[in-house]
Length: 196
Image (cartoon, rainbow, N blue to C red; front, side, top):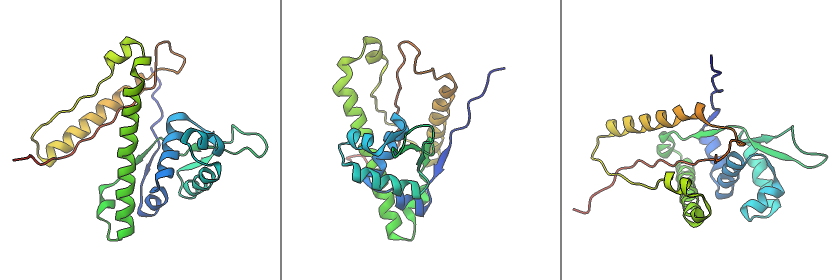
């Protein structure tokens, strides 16, 4: 019998926690801790091109809202290591329609920051793909598709894509597996208006 992976810890945003996360540097700090692992405020400052004072302040704000926590397995003396408290964040669409304009503004900022991070990651891939072996450049993908669907069909498509991606999680290999790399996927499903 194969061992099932632990379920991923997902943080569901509330109006309060969204306001605590909705800052460009906080979104980047949390993304860095999730993607690159635990780090100190100084290491994060270097990674992100920020001052350690700014990263330290915003890490404490993220901790106050439950997004990050101390990593007790690391650090010596006064050196404080941080890690993400969760593997993912769930954004409930109702936050964009909250009666409080501050919550709606925070939702808008949060979503735009995520779109910016996705664009930066893709741009970095395009700028560095020549450094990767041919089998990686041939297996990577940057496609777009257009379908005419109803909201219900679109929701179903999104659920099937998520299920397919999650079905690969138990197949993920260790970091020391030869010819393996961390693979990022972005899905963007949204309606558009035609030029007609």
